[in-house]
Picture (cartoon, each protein chain N blue to C red):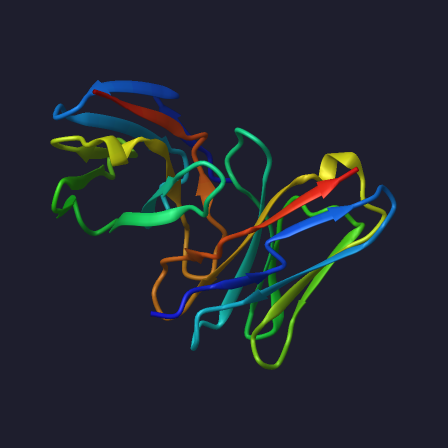
Length: 111
Length: 112
């Protein structure tokens, strides 16, 4: 079965640079969520979109923005990157039910 | 907001024995409780879930119980195997499309 796709899988950036992470949800899933996971931490919710509209916002810095497009894929834009932004970024999607399925993640390293 | 507490943070179990991980939640309105297994550097994988109108659910060696009155839910893994070694997260969700509130995770070690 098709799963959530994320790209890129790995990303290395310098401080103050920008990064764009992409997420392609499971087909027919209408809700996308972004989570950030630091080493040894639980995933922390950043932002979510339902039917292309922002549905909830968590601990997302003002330097980050996101959107969901007409084909339901989502992009997380991160600007003025800081060392502390180094983390695993997961996208998850859900459809008719409440289960959220996670993508493989993007490992971001800020140098 | 919702808060999920998870215990223990680390658990070592002899291969073949059972493992139990316990969680409590604060918001009585939460009505969906998934459990995720995460291996190092990989995605959280949904292994079992339970809705608030059900007291117990079982899938092969994995079972989850829910006590709505006490706001407790637990994961039970029987006949543990080496591949069960991972971090397990309990979680709560209020409604469909809501964010997952994770517990802090339990690192499960299966000892040979």
